Image (cartoon, rainbow, N blue to C red; front, top):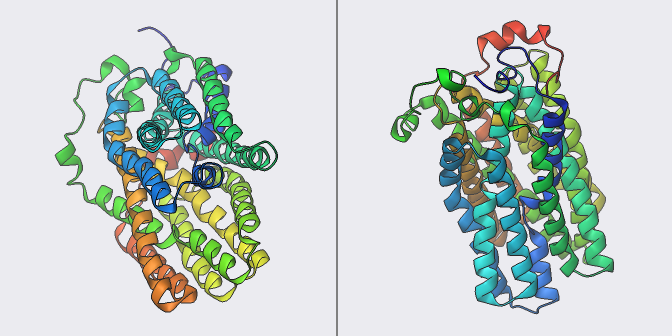
Length: 427
């Protein structure tokens, strides 16, 4: 047997080099895996003078491609052992798409580049999660995912600041080059991870390490018969159904009632929420180490959503909206960590951990789409307060659904040994 034993399963920890490699990847990929986000629409409208309908086609291409790629991406990460190359290659594919958009901004090229971007972005989250599980093992995964999310939100904060400065003072073209720079840096940083420290059987959720594993992954049809997984996936849909449209609605409300303040207020909302998420991601890791179950932690995130919706229905001034958006930092910060951990718990021994990550991402997209669709029609007919209260009611239903039907997933042996392991020791 060559290389190191699976970290976290034998008590041996991964090297500092591999840990720093994971830190760097999560920081740099925060900007790369989300591509251009809202900056693309601003660039196409302001610099290239595209019509709103044409911009909508370009934006939809990435979303549709990402949704269609989630399950294949999970299966790909589960099947292949070249996970470092998957991360680097996906990042470089996104960089290529950004260069195509900025150099050849015609509709066919932009749509094709957006499809590339959406497909590649679907690979990065499960690949990072698989590397984390394969390097540190199940026992230390909660601390590692907490650390991943802290670096991810820190990267989002830095990227948002840099993108805003570049777009304001240099030109929107440079935002595309910024993504390319982060992607190339990610391809370099991934080489810090020692491939001998990655247990690929554990990385896909297998029960036994390395050559000892002989069982094939659980068939997909059997996976979808598992009640606990289906309840969790339904909870993910409901979480985002009640949450996703709140910030866009708040931006529209500010644009209508306080013209000229919407852009800067939305930027402040995003940056403030990312700062909160850094602390929340760290706190979730500490809470799990202290003995709190996954279910109780996720319930906190679900409980925040109806409160946020009710407050948005009552407050419409910029400073108040930014303050309320801090609650999104709490909810989203918890979700980013705990969803990966619950998926790892549920997929233990199935060999389908990364497929489950794809299913979760697909449910996130479905919930967000339903949220924006329903909220838009409610606001159109009944006003913004009704829209926020509708989302709050859905969020309250999500809380009740998860509380009543979702079992606790924390493994018994983790509860027994949590106090014996220093928090984040091998993270």
